Length: 78
Image 1 (cartoon, rainbow, N blue to C red):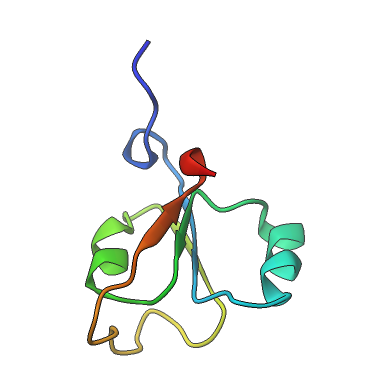
Image 2: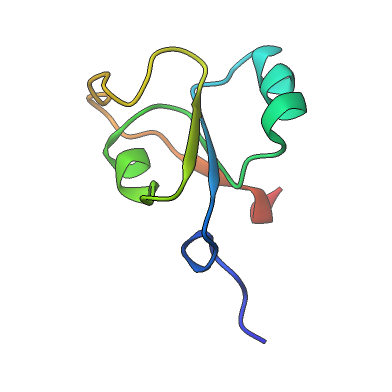
């Protein structure tokens, strides 16, 4: 059986910019993320699909992306 990825499911949860206890507050409400993006950058914008849910620590999807990309975490790696 092939490994299931975010693109194979109708909804993928992304967390963006969490660095403190707000992560656990979001976790209690939305459940665990599939992807953790350290910044809202070009990679994060590319990874988000049309049916995905994106939870921001600050701001929203209309904020300008970071000038430099940051490494992301996939829950499969944790």
